Amino acid sequence: MKPRIPHPYLPNSVSEVRAEMLQTIGVDHIDDLFATIPAELRTNEPFNLPEALSSEAQLVSHMRGLLGKNEPANPGKTFLGYGSYQHYVPAICGEINGRAEFLTAYAGESTEDHGKWQALFEYTSLMAELLEMDVVSIPTYDGYQASATGIRMALRLTGRSEVIVSTAMQSGKLAKIRTYLPDDVTVHLVDVDPLTGALAAERVGELLSERTAAVFIETPNVFGVVEVEARKIAARAHELGTVVVAGIDPISLSYLEAPASWGADIVCGDIQALGIGLHFGGGHGGFLATHDEPEFVFEFPSRLFGLSPTLDPQEIGFTDVAYERTSLARREEGNEWVGTAAALWAITAGVYLSLMGPDGMRELGTTVAGLTRYAKDEIASVPGFTVLHLQSANWREFTIAHDSLSAAELRERMHERGIHAGVDLGGFFAGRDRELLVCVTEQHTQADIDAFVTELRSL
Image (cartoon, rainbow, N blue to C red; front, side):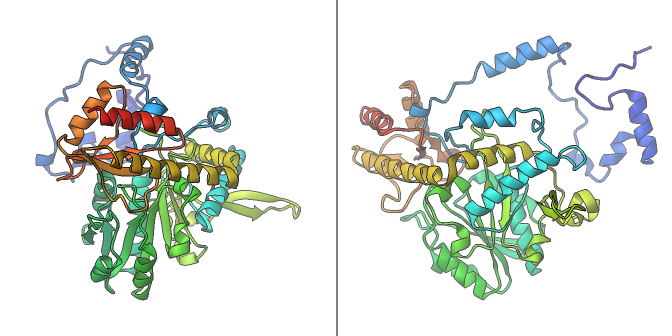
């Protein structure tokens, strides 16, 4: 008889336990749970997976082998961006997010996590100041989900079924938006001007109508270009009762004006750049923010933390705000399902913002802006190279192209010289095989950029 030993990593793996769970919910077989999925979309063949490892020691050895294949990203020789950025991570960020009272991805409950709730409240307060908004959510899973949720909030608020979305965003984010929206929603895609790399207010205006629920503007966009006509677009959208959703990286507000100042109603994005680091591709957490207007607040699917009086008139406590609107309270009747699997990153971002302060953030922003302009001008002077959108305002990222080499070839040749030159946009966008997205942060120095340009000249 096979012993009833639980799997060390898989919950409810004992057959008797699984049978009891199925009996409790009134299902004869686990396959019955997938009956709504058409048979042609299901596979009956076993997956091509290796045999399971039999011990923790083997698992550790296997993982060390995989991690050993990673090539460290040397800040001075790495110019990669496209959603995961190599900003400096102060040591205190890791010190605090590794503390036992914080070290879990979940927001927790008041009975045991009141201190964590305070830390999350401090994070949302700092983010609200940075964003010039009043209400900020506990993180969604990532910026992709936050962007899609921001648009869904606008759909619910307006009762309309059309949205306008710029194509100048990461292709994965656009795919997330398109798959996350209801099937009956029409998505109008609008391209940026090829000369400026930015949206033209006139072009967006042509698509706007009284049927438009939301217009989504990301700035800086995927090409690193600042959307300088966002204010015009927002003004026209508001005339038609359209909600303006802005996608941003909050660290860019160390230099750029907050979207709230030019008319954004909902602001969303990812907090990876705020002291979290790369983590083999980025530790991510999405945020949503609005003004303190009840109709907007009650469309948040995610948890909100605020202050509340206690029985003692001399005390205040930290509490869930409007908890009844979440799927945690309403279950299947919730606006959207929500988890809290990025709460630890919120605390980390709060530590980062506390440490940097207004002066530190301002210094970071101006440093990155200066390095971006310097790198653009220096590369533009190299024979055979073109800097796209040279006269546009860029922050942190910009696009270059070579007269005869594809972006993939350019990356390969630079990699042979020990430099990660940038991201091949052809891998994400049709017709952009020659375009390389270059990223600079405060981790780079002018000397690093000079060395990069020297290698470009030698190609």
